[in-house]
Length: 444
Image 1 (cartoon, rainbow, N blue to C red):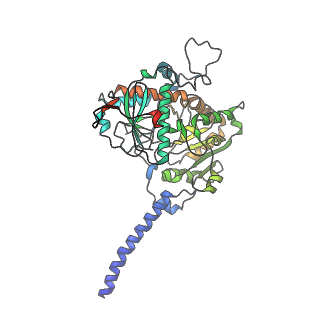
Image 2 (cartoon, rainbow, N blue to C red):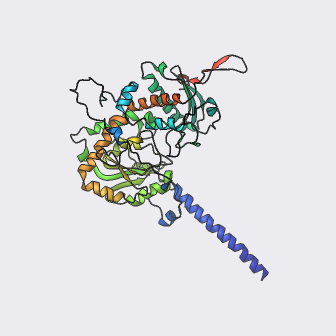
Image 3 (cartoon, rainbow, N blue to C red):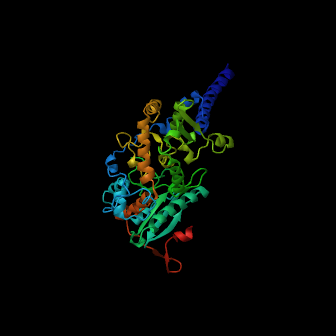
């Protein structure tokens, strides 16, 4: 009897622990799986992840777009107006021209300045920051760009760092006198999310509650060195070249919603999209396994080929997804769930009204099918939304001119609330003054 009781007492904890282990294995498998389909039983075990969040973002900046219009070539330029085809590649617009051409683009810079509450950013604030992977400390002094400190992890980090610094330098050198730019010192990160969003850091994206960080354009505006993308300007040109038909290629578009992506980057949210749309006659959504030749051959779409479809789904990843700007370049209806992560140009997103430039759906995609059905039944309305998207994003707010204007506005805005850096420091060993950091020409 004693031995039997002891045996049972050992079996119960073992069974309990074994059950926990099975659940954990299911969760790990589910969150890391990039297959199109997932067993529903496993799906029910997965935690909510980023499919639920404390807040989503709704932008109300429709007045930002009021001044955007098409200017006829016959109009005499008594007052300068931005013209697509003439000014979109001009990276050297004046501050007044930038403000006039891109109302609403600089909203987050103003927000970040106001968040300081009159408190200056001091050198000691930067010195006290923990330097996580993907972070870079840089300085602009007398019109030159210096790299002071870099924490890269592999080639991917280095490419993104180089792309970001190249974009900054391009914006600096495009103006007539870059020495007129203020001297500043700053940290930025090329990671998808800041390790410490409560610090004065330049970031790719933020949530509503991340008030201390400053938004910057992502590295892809220079170039994203992955298959089917490359330099952003080249992608825009290739996409625009497909709009040569009288109707902008609209009549040739496939009347379906398209999406390709890696579910494990945001397993609950992206799987919700797959669950709702997979196998439906109005959708062509598939998971991508980047390391699988078969998956890439059968399912991969380049950024340009996305534009062959009438409806383009966008889903956030680990934080934001850098793919959005490529979708916004197409003359297609961009469909986005309620977003948690903000990029610098998101203030121009309009989800309803005459200036609507995308379609917003719930974060679990529960209303996706009904909204696609409505658009298919109302093609003129779908076309209007797509045309608005091109007019606002591809032909204005995603142009090289807009990006350069934003970088210079960021530099000036940061300088208003930050300390004046010193170019030289004393070398403790030699007692000689030495320049801090490495000039961008040498760093490259």
